[in-house]
Amino acid sequence: MRLSAFFRAAAMAAAFALPAAAFGPVLAQTPAATSPSAAPPASVEAGGGDLQAAIGKSNAYTALMNRTLRAIQSWQRYRSWVDMSRGPTGRERYISYGLYSLYDVAGEISRAEAARGREPAMPELDETVGRYIQAYQDLAPLITRAERYYERKDYRDDGMAEGRDLHARMVPAAETFLRERAALDAQMRGFKNDLDGRELAAIEKREGRSARWQVRNIMISARAVMDLMPSNDQPVVDLKAFDAAVASYAGAVREMDRFKENNPSGVPLIESQASSWLGKLRDFRDKLGRSRGDVRRGAANDANWLVNSYNTMVSLADTAMRLPR
Image (cartoon, rainbow, N blue to C red; front, top):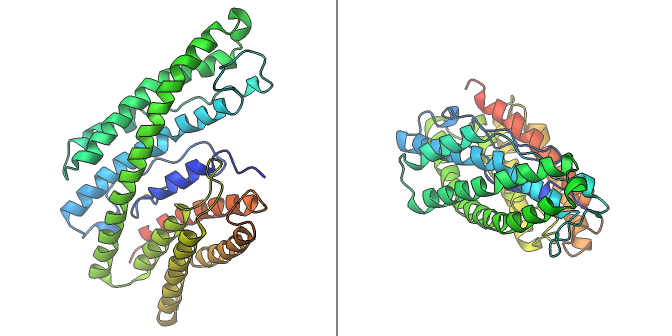
C-alpha cells in the first residue's frame, strides 16, 4: 500500500515543531501546514532574552519552511504523472493531475529575511535560509505557470510546446530547491534540538517538572519519533534508531505517569492521547519487525494514523502550554 502523498511533508514539518506557542502542526493528508505564531512562546517568558531571540528566529524560519512545503507537494504531484527523463507529451494517462497551486509566502519570506539580520547570528544557518529563499523564488513562478497551463489544458492548443519548455526549466530549479531544502532541514534539526534542551531547562528552573514541563517533554520525544517515520521515497525504517526513539518516548510517558501520582489533575489535554499514541507506536513497530522495516508490507495505514494522531496531539499540547500555571 502506498503511503499518503504528503507523508514526507508531515515528517519534515514535525521535525520543526516550535516551543509552546506553536508546536509545528504537520501535514498528513491536508495540503498545508499552519504557520506558527510570531509571538514569544509563553513557556519561555522567563527563559532569558537570548533564548527568546533564538526562538523568534526559529519561529520565522519554521513558518517559511512550513508554508513552502506546498512547492514540494506540487512538484511531487507533477512527478507522479510525468516521465521525468522524457518530459510531458500530452498523452499521459493522469495529465489531469497537473500541479498544485502555491500559497502566498511573501509575509513568511519577509519575516525570514528580517530574522537573518537579527541576533543571535548563526552564519551557516542564516546563509542557508538565504539560498533557500532564492531557490524557492526561482522555482515558484515556474510551478505557478505550469499549474495554470495544465489546469486550462493549454497544451491542447500549442501541442505541448510550453509544457516541454517549462519542464526543461523546472527540473534544474526543483533540484536546486530540494537540495537547499535538505541542507536547511539538517541545520534546523540541530538548531531545534539545542532550543528544546534550553527551553526544557528554563521551564524546570522556573517551575520544576510541572505539568507544562511534562507536556513539552512528551512533545520533544514524540517529534523525535516522527523524524524517523517512513516516506514514499524512503519506505524502509531504520529499526534500531526507531526503537531507541520509541523507548525515549515511552520514558517520557512514564515520567508523566509519575507526575500524576503526586498531582491528581495530571497533565491537561494530552495525557490520554499521549498514552494511546504509545500503544499504537508499539503495534506499528511489531508490523515493521515482521516486514524488516518496510512500511509498504502491511503498515502504511498505521503510519498515516500515527501522523494524524500526532497532529491532534500537537494542537492539544499547544493549548495545554497556554493554560495558567
